[in-house]
Image 1 (cartoon, one colour):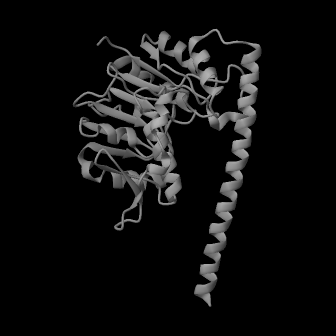
Image 2: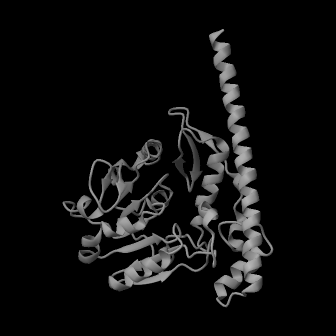
Image 3: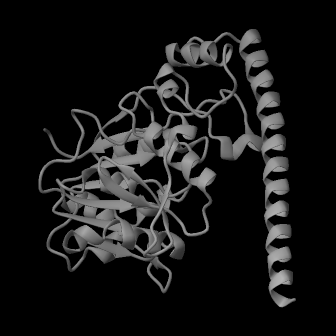
Length: 305
């Protein structure tokens, strides 16, 4: 009787989850359609003069609203992502370049497929979200600070080259997945379970204080922290002045981020350039204002190559 009740409860929970997921997906799709009509209507009345905006609006006029704009994304299909389950720990994973990339225990197959597909798309060479390029990359023996690493995909792509990677991630489920992903490289991977910020307490750490007593400082910083990028930069002021650094910084979580961070790097004496291309930040659809599209990433460095 008890087992039957547990089984029935699981069935009800599963049905409830599917119902909520389908409703949320339908509601989000309706919202996207509404925003798309609004964007196209705006630019029909105010034709864009900027070349990137012209390309983005032209692409949107022929496609549904999406995060990125360009044919590079056409080669990525979530349905084709093969998801495995590790019987030794119960975690889902995918194979990327011959390595296992683990995901949260709570993720179902479809969630893993969608997330991994986005990760691959983001790091496509033609994507505005790509952290590296031929002139701005990870070199043999580099030390990486992966700030807001989540599943650790970026570090895994370069793990063979890296001397050390510091994985800053406070989510306990992600930490479990990271420990599984990087178990073959324990000697060069340090997981830091904290929010990176401009203060230091039980939950937060500043990069200045974290690396103060560490002789080997990072030479590459990937910073993607869901809107807290300004606090991260404020908390690494000493590092920026005293060490050579490359910084790949996300600039789309707030609509003013790109302009704010461009001024910051200019005032700090960094050479900088924006990644080509634009994006729509779909987590902020309720606050969409012209010009709607945002620059995605700044690549900055304080030394000559």
